[in-house]
Length: 349
Ligand code: 2U9
Image (cartoon, rainbow, N blue to C red):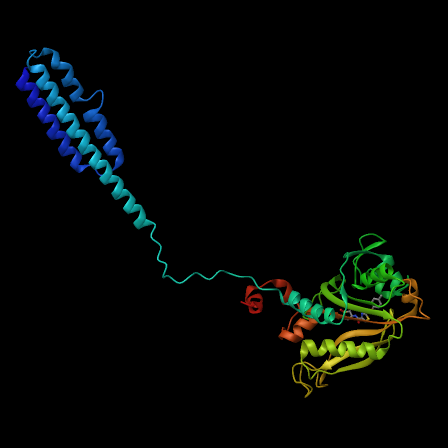
């Protein structure tokens, strides 16, 4: 090729390169463009190799033209690169835009289970009266679950029909009382003993609306010098008023438990009809909520408290029963089904 032909070729390359550059819309295509028009194997590099064919006087001129075109294309490439980078950045910013005026999405908070709620509330009442709270094993020994509570070997409560046995000696506790025994043993001969024991207990019962083979008991025990039945009544009255309202009264009815003597069932004024008489209280105006009594002297002696010097009272209740009465829940099984429609009603926020 002679000088004019080479110059024409160079100009054609420049025109083509500039036209193609206009249509480029992304970085990848821009890089390919650079390789094609400015790279080692580009037509322009090919042209510079043909410079040898020119006259000596033409060479510098053509060399200058080559440089000008190369610089011009480099400059355009650079402008395009900056323009593309700016466009890509603003596209990214648009895509990441957050509308800070949108209302927040409410998090799905859990709620405390009604049984836990009742336990906490009752714990608070007794903590306020100076009780300590204790918990202990659900798998117990025959000794602590029965023997130490004056339930001798032939007692019907020990029957296979009523108790989940693991071995002859080990069983699922049928009440939380073993923990009161353990607390007495730990503290003896120190007085007073004032302890509240909430916890899960197990009985071989048929499940129905008011019974469960596993439920939650809350038991209390006070031991000291001069502890009397009136202390029992006053303490339980305090509890009843804190949970069910200042108007509450407690009524004691004679009963029997092997570990207390005398024993009493404790009634409250019906929470449904306030004593008028309704279906809940079977028209009596009262509902049973606790069992209680003065600790049997044999139980005190076995646990290390001289029964000729010390006396005590004890009581027990089912947390489920308290929750059923307090929240108007008609069936104990609802506590264990974990239906969110029930549970969410106990949310505090
Ligand atoms: C010791 C001494 C005495 C705890 C007591 C009851 C009466 C009672 C039941 C109520 C409903 C259990 O949940 S329930 O089925 N409890 O009636 N419990 S006196 O007496 C004790 C405990 C421990 C050392």
